[in-house]
Length: 403
Image 1 (cartoon, one colour):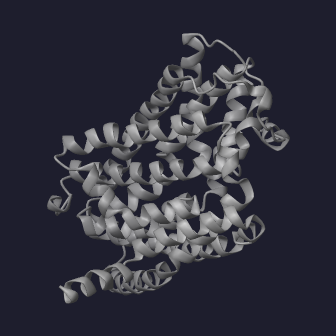
Image 2 (spheres, rainbow, N blue to C red):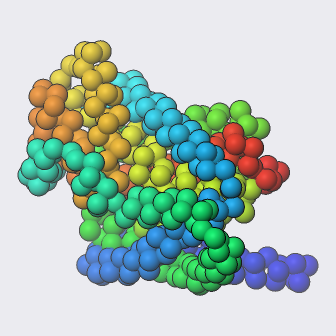
């Protein structure tokens, strides 16, 4: 019995998930009881995120190039890309609709706004007046740039005479990069601790209470989307959403602690390959999804607009609601590449509608940071499901027993 207990304790203390979870709880406690110290932890979180971001471009490049070179048929590259984009549009539109439906039914904005704290939204209103430009979006989206470069290089490599020698070098580079990443990921608890300490220290748990109904509605809706919508999609392919979440537990906790899905991107790509998804599908779908398949962000955007309409007693007609969905179908695709993206997209949509005061954004700035975890987690899970679905659809899913 003692040896069994020692074995359990040993496994617990060598488990990265345990340390990340402990770091999140410790960071929240520090931010709550010592807010000033918690706010000073921001650089710790930013440092970890910066380190992981260094791996994003090389991992995307190596994965895609090696995937395309091993695929042989370049028409398959185009087919996978087209399937991914169609899937992204269908699922994110569905997410927009669910966000609106949940807000209409639960009515999170049916509260007295007189006692709510508001913040300045001038910077977001100014950005909202700027015309969205795809070239600017591309220039500001490093992930998308790496994706395009890798696809172009991978296609050219297929026509290169000494392709095998180049591929051998890239394979060695890929193994070395992932080994380095594994070492850096041991710092994940430190990054999660800093991120949570800063969030709670700056915004305070007390800021959640006035808009608790919106917070609860948002989290419940995203949970429903994950377990019912994404779960049903996986179930169609005879896979389990619960098994997927269990496999992604370390990545989900990293996202929870840092409030960003980017630190988990390299690890997610490696994990999906281990689950059985083919390298070409992982390389093409995951990076593209980080720009165009933002399920959590879609729910957040549509729900926030209905919330603000309810807060100001603005009755939206069915044509106006359809207009909101239509606008967000386009503008939400640029959310990944814009600073303060959520508020800029909201501000631009509200400006187009004319009947919801843009100043209302000031009411939700204070709790936005606490909702960003739910958005990022939903985005991560959505992209994992998309990759598995495309891989299954292509007949490239090697080991379904893991899910």
